[in-house]
Image (cartoon, rainbow, N blue to C red):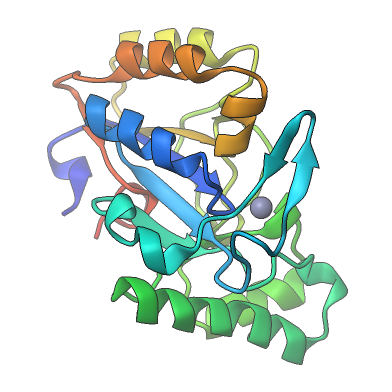
Amino acid sequence: MDWKKQYRKAITFSYDDGIEQDLPLLQILRDYGLKGTFNLNTGLDYNHGTWQYGDLCVHRLNLEEHKKDYAGQEIAVHGRLHQNLTELSVAEIQEELGQDAAEITRIFGTRPVGMAYAYGVYQERVLEEVRKLGLRYGRGVVSTHRFDLQADLLQFQPTCHHDDPQLFQLAEQFLNSDPTEPQIFYIWGHSYELEGKNHWDYLKRFCEKISGREDVFYGTNREVLLGV
Ligand SMILES: [Zn+2]
């Protein structure tokens, strides 16, 4: 659906890496009727790609066991092994992205149409391969603090990270605005940050604030960026 026919404001979330804490995050999004996109590394699992975030040992989910948990949300590419794409050969980029897209299609039954760049980095030859794979948007990590539509969706940048000191101020500005052109509030992050920083209540307060507005469309990245 093209939300712009009915709305001038849309909110979407983007969460990376398919971490254990996606489960409580998914529950919060469901509770508040919010939507987003989860960018997953299908070559990693509970015991592979583990690392330490402060006191928290970060584990990825065994995705096959959690298909239903992600229901209603979009699944997108984040690289099979979470590699820095700018350090790979063209053949390696094709493998890293192509195999992730194929595995997502196999596990979730839907072919992904977008991605988030691991570490937020890319270069022209990466974009070329992303295009060839038929992915239609790619997200970086540079906060724009803006809501305008962006022309180059393969180099899309978020409004802000969920830990941004201006998060609530931006929400206020967005919710109170009456724009003449379509606007998107795009928030990204990692669910382990919510656990590691004990920010669950903070996120719930944010979701409480932005949810349930009749003049806002709540959709996945695909719905909001591509209108499909
Ligand atoms: Zn990542």
